[in-house]
Image (cartoon, rainbow, N blue to C red; front, side, top):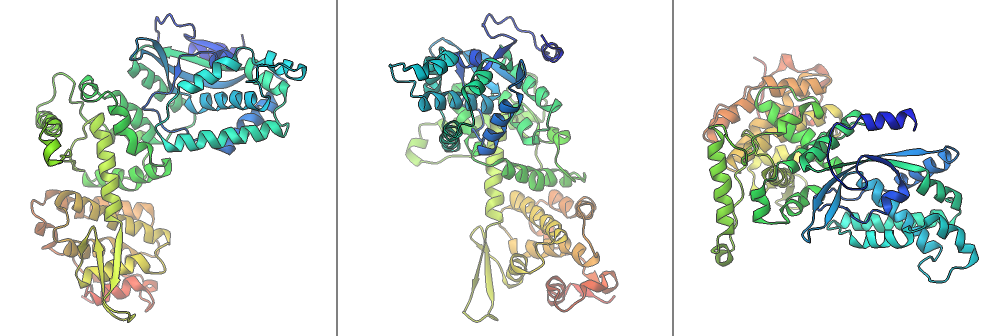
Length: 507
């Protein structure tokens, strides 16, 4: 055994007494795919490998095929019983790789027509290479269920791509033999689901850094309770469905540009970049744990009341449903409610940023009316929204930072007070956020962050008990001497709007 193999075995931090035949081993791909109890659990993320991933895998196989062995990585499994009482091995980490290997064998079987009972001499060699995989892999594939359309599409697309690779002769029988019998994976089987996810977290944090939201997903999946499962055996898959429907880039944007910044700015904390260092910002209280702190008792009552209300037989009559009353400045509830919260805020933010602008007539100079979430704005707020959506410099980085300030303050206000007094709030938030665009020649990330942390608007929203307490105090106009000379041009739309709204002063 090579030193790297020994080191990989020493890395295992979790000891289990599982009697299963794959417990903590370095095994060949063929042995992995002969394991008939491998299962993709319903809470797994969609299968998202693409043609580039396929090309990279096969390129590695071809370039390493002169080696005595080649390591493809680690696969973490959680051993459990299914509804029929049979032991299954849930793939916690390594789903993308395992499914691609299964697709490869399925493509080989199809290309060489090995599902035909006849055995021409030309097919004998490939049959010997595959061995029992001609029977085991189709059965293994048949047992997998994919609720996500993304998974189904990518599986079909990649299967066709692998067929093309084989038909072009880019994956020879020697390469296939090397893949199945000389390529290896490190297998870890764990009995406890939370240990499996902890191992998943630690393995990935040592290698290429995951998106922080990946670590949050693993943490909050662990925090589902037995009570949740009693409500609905499929509750994990159903609760995480919205999350899984979002691309990684969308989730990263939702957390990094909005939720992380708002939560930190509320508490006067800087929020430059959302990394794994800050994942604890999205961990809170687990309501199923014993000895809850006193502050969590009201949350627990709300949590159970909502479930009781929604499960009551009267809901079959009135068709009503109650959602948990999420608030950005409240403590997060771990587990199921976390995923519901992300769905809630993804929807709220999308709605708050969906703007409709209508002209009263076809005349270019005519008044316009802007609408947000079916709320029509007054003339001043409509002018602000129309400008933000259309001015030519809105794509500059500094303008994007100012817009992010505007969006997040508005989102926080809507989260707390809804749409009441929205026009007045938009005016206040616009002047507060876009002052930095006129005060400075260049607006940087730190500029935006400092304004949010020290600018007091987030604190004003947090401390307010009524909407008018946010806007009645107004906001001070911008002094002429504080404006960068280069920003006073007649074609500077932001400057001209400040002037038209009477937020410029010589004093």
